[in-house]
Image 1 (cartoon, helix red, strand yellow):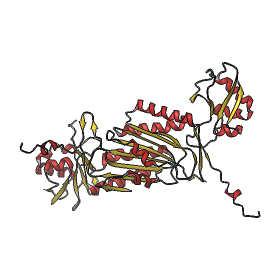
Image 2: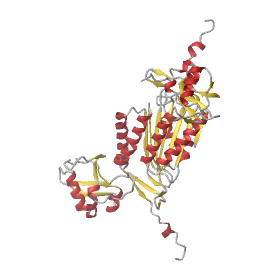
Image 3: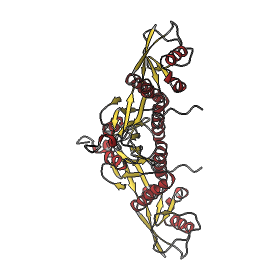
Image 4: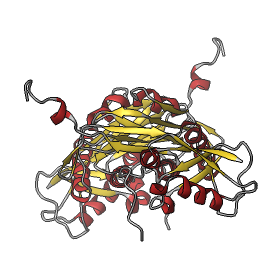
Length: 91
Length: 91
Length: 137
Length: 137
């Protein structure tokens, strides 16, 4: 199935667009979505460990969660806890 | 020497006046002032353990402190930490 | 801004007074007269101060807070006299670069104010039942 | 009151909205745009939200806070768009019967808001040096 993922902040700037449409398997998990994002835009790869995925405005709880049909999907960069959009260096 | 002590809140209500004038020895300590208050108004006796003495707007640090001449003296009942003027029961 | 006032407190100018472009955080506390506490209805509170000492203690509290936290501006305003339910008895407002400091400083100021500043409160007694007896009773 | 707004925030009606005669304590927090941070001068911040999710998360935060503390009224308002130094980006205001609860709830709300609500900020770049070149250069 085709899925459109909303992009915000640093993810939007990295991709250069407010959303990205990718091809997902039926019964794809959140992990599958992350892989699809990496394939669609390799520039996102270094950010991926810091990006959360939201499904219908809820943070996806783990990589096993299956993406429902027609869900609104979004990539959520670290929110503005006090500093700005910078992605923290990997630990 | 004669000393006038300002009274507030429950101490004022117990005495029925906004101040009390007592006779103090020269070099009287805060302890001596407390004794003089007890003699001048025995109704204050049960409150005394809960009353602080202020000398020139500063809490008297201990019973050994000597009362200076011409100092402004005041009796400070427990301040309104959240409940009202009630004097707590002795421990 | 430090003030002990018999006038009705408006929180707006007090909070505004601590705002500055150097601060990222403003924390404020308003103490208000609670109308209902458990089963009891309050018809008003009477606040009494030892004004000279209270003003001195408020200034000391501000100085002490400034030595502990990077406070940019602080305001401590306490009302005295008769207050109706819902009215503001005390305002503490603090601005700091960051929010943790602002919360800690504001909390410490109101907690310490309530311990050391010589201001007392007392329920206003409900005397209506005596005053409002119908004529002829 | 929960709101995500592109309009300038006035803290006064937000704080007033949580006052009630049932509360003895109102704690509020204003986040403001800091002009100077260390050696850096900020000329403005741009806030971006995922509006649907941000509104949902703010409502969840309020519900969660109400389950933890005896909150009487709460308000969570966040600005989006371009903000100048000194302007208010966020207001959290809470009323409770007592002050400890009000401080804890307000602190938890702003701390958790900053972790989970999808709103991002970004320094506005100083492009004046490019735009304002004198004619002919």
